Amino acid sequence: MEETKINPEATHPQETQQVSPTPTPAPNSPQENKIDWGGELQRFFKTDLKNLFINLFKHPASGAQKFLATSSPSVANPLYMVVLSFVVITFFSFLCMAINGFAEFRPCVILGLAPIFFSVFITLILFVFLAIKQKPDILLAFRHSAIHVMLLSIVMLFGCLLTLFADTSLFNIMSGDNQFIGILFALTAIYAISMGISAVRQTLQTCETSEKEGYVWYVSPLVIILSLWLTGVIIKAIIF
Image (tube, rainbow, N blue to C red; front, side):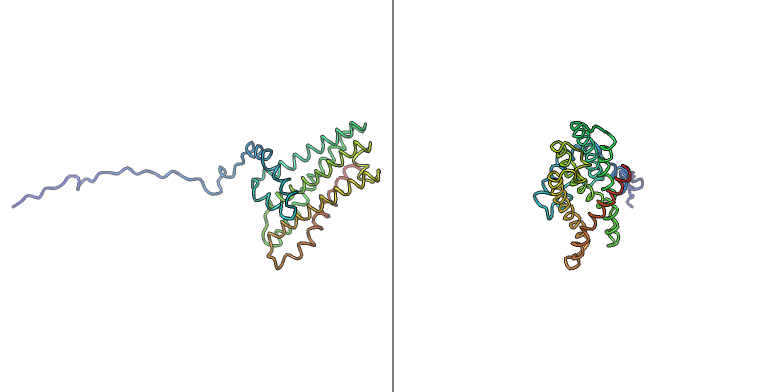
């Protein structure tokens, strides 16, 4: 009778080492939502700021959408636009007023606050329209509002430069003190407002199909006009 040999490896199987899987961060973890402010700032001045003006002036009918499609989706991008507008307008308005002998810092700061108020109002108005269409996106509204802030800044900077030739202040130009300079300023403002209306239209068109986008052509000017009016009311209230 043959003896059956028992394999010791069969009775005592080799223990395998269990490797615990490395934990992966959750999709909405703080690590993924953390903003690289330094990297975003470098990208803003290196590419995004240049691409903004290239797209707006090269493609007036679709430049806003092209810019938003290629720029950083971070909230840092529009924040940098608003802060840059405040700093540049405050500095240049004070510089031009100082050259003309109207060196008062408080009015310059008030002028610098205009893009900030404008950004707040247009963001809220756009967000309301997006919410009505059941597509509320406060970041999208803020990113679009930053584009309008840059357009407003161009107009105000042009007005500051005109003060050097008119020997007056930007407030007097906006009040119609000098007729010729006032006409140049008004034409620049109308051009920038037209581009702003086009940018609002592109924003609202993202919520509609081609069959239902007719109202967009009528609402877009109202958004710009209402935002500018509210900004003017706040600025006048601060001044007076």
